[in-house]
Image: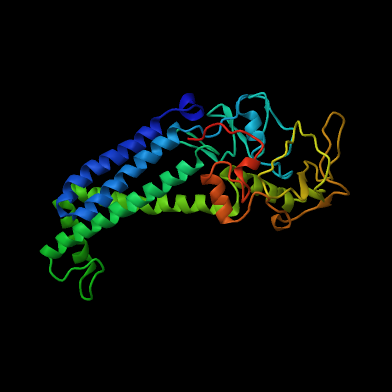
Length: 342
């Protein structure tokens, strides 16, 4: 049980594959004779894509931070001095934590631009495979919607041949009980086609909802991990425990713990710190200095704090799908050499 909860295992991946294979095994032989050549071609593409993107998401490096890749991921994103502060050390990996990274207790490693650990791919979603995860969501949502609509179209044609005057939307004077009897007759006529059509129709809204939820995070310029951090920050602000002060663009920095990121077009304009006692931050002996200048001011709402990782939906999406997206700069200007991205 401990391994099921706290370690990587392929149980959910196997279940996901079994649902795909089993549903297609029941659906396609029954639906194939009723499909035209173009529908058959698009169906084959829709069936193949989820397997392709599942394989790519499963076998891609999500962005594991290792001694060999540490310098690269440290240079990939700047610290925002709100959610991510320089100088934080991962005791497990024994490495400085890059901005936007998170240590995964299941994968046992820090992951660059960590989004979440996904049981459906048995791996973290991070900088290296976020694009494949989005493609997997889109292809699975398309497959379930396509299968549900195609199955309903085939079944409705069968019902109309048996019950003249019937339509998908109950016509006037057509009783609801009679309408359900016609549907149940069609499902019982081919249980495999009927059951998989209902399964696809019921699960498709859930997959689409997950896709739009993920795209909403892209629109906001956050990951799932960062969204949770912002929620915690909002609670600290509401309780009066969060403080902010301005930061100069030409400030001095320790490049050993906060390397420059030439590809990122913006710099943090303010430092945000939450305290445990509701008092302004104080640097104690042995602690690194806090960023910013001037007096700390209490901040009450998230709208008063800028998310420097949100550069607009187009650039946010490009940063996921284009490796080392340079936001209009030439790639030759980037100062680091990247590991290969799958």
